Length: 380
Image (cartoon, rainbow, N blue to C red; front, side, top):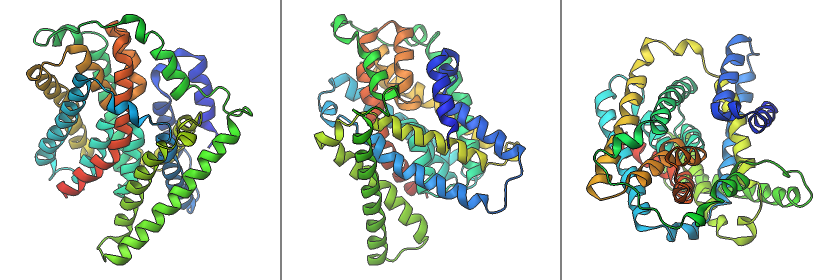
């Protein structure tokens, strides 16, 4: 549970660690630990319990800092690009499902996780894994392949992508350059920096946020029991967990509208720390032998889905006259999560699009669980 502290410290001290990514490092270390050491027979129950606790607590903490009002102020082209990006992801995943459904076990669950991941990020992938009761080995294989393919796509985005897409898309029209100069610094302070977390000005109020998150979880559990009692269903445990995940997502968004909760500092970072614990634990549960020829359909699916969604998004953006920089940053925010928005914006030499990209990325965190579960149930 304390290993993520070391990774976060190293990431803030050494740029190379930050570039590799704390999520990637936590997965790799968890995978090595789980396969290199023989764990006690009852250890799996402890791992499952810790997985559930971290994800359920992380979701509301991540959502408390949402600025829902800023969603309403998004420029028309930004909102349009967000909609086109989500449509592209859903269409591509649907196509992949019909191509690989007979080759991937419980392919509808994999599709749900990927939709959540490509509309939000790792927290959504982890939450949907729990909501749909996805096998840990399938989850790790899916996310590992996604990390590899995503790294290659990111390399493309920060090198030649702009020149390539400019061959058929219109260029960005600059606005007020002075307006966005502090965007990267603001994002780092609000969503990445852990400095001052235990200070007297921050920690007591953070405990209030954690307490509110616990209350939301209890309400979510209560709703799940009530609904499944009123409406008898098959696969009761899975349905209950789905209701819990969607309930705490909804209640977390509602709580973010309360200024006293929304202004609590470091709640997002606390949620991400819990996600890192989840990454270590769930990776330690995976059997490295699952990376074999039987898992290649998942790899091929992702190889088709990620570039496919990107290309479809580009074509739709061309049709609807969205500029290349907005398209690239919105695609990054959706498929790779907000931390990569400043990276791509820096490669484009365009700070003006950082804030719209970050807003879209945070919206993705909020809607990813809904979309992922919805698409999975439709495909089922």
